[in-house]
Length: 267
Image 1 (cartoon, rainbow, N blue to C red):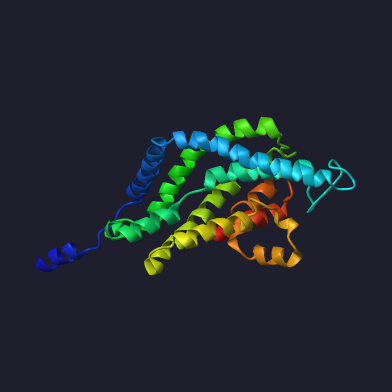
Image 2: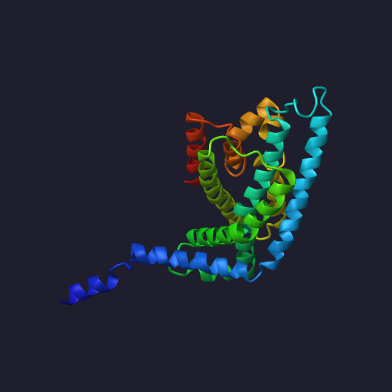
């Protein structure tokens, strides 16, 4: 009897699947409500993102207009002017959805010592932060991405895909992009355990990500060797792949290969 009691007392505690899903779902909900309290700054963000899109719109319009064959007939990096404008719009709309500051949050917790409290809790810290990122993404989609779309698309025009199914594949691709981006930010944040202050690293990462994700410039604008190097990195899974799917540049096996690549990096 005593042996049975001892074994029972030493049995490892285990949370059920339903309880686990409910726990991390609760973190998603709390993140959504937290950002809802600061929704005013996202209204101002609609204005700033519109300025970003406008700057790129006028820049690329001038570049295409300078081509000898004329703006309407010109192709740069395999993209027409209409495709380039759509590329810019979808890139910034997508960024408004998947962006988060997991690296900054984790770094602050390490510096302030709060991470010790998180690590002793009966939960998986990375899954918790990923859940919070998904809650933030849900808030961003409603309060940031949709308003930006409503403002930007009528002003600058958006050439939608000829195949309606590409809308669904694009949404799936951006969901995978959210996972990849969040986990890259988590890895960067983990550097704080060794470096403590990583604000310089975070700033460098943000600048690098603007180029390596393809938000600022399509990869087809770069030399072949740069495109080859970038194809081996996970950053294209964050913006370049979803946008090229929307443009209809990935069809059939190429589309499935691109989504599989995103899923592979997410895993």
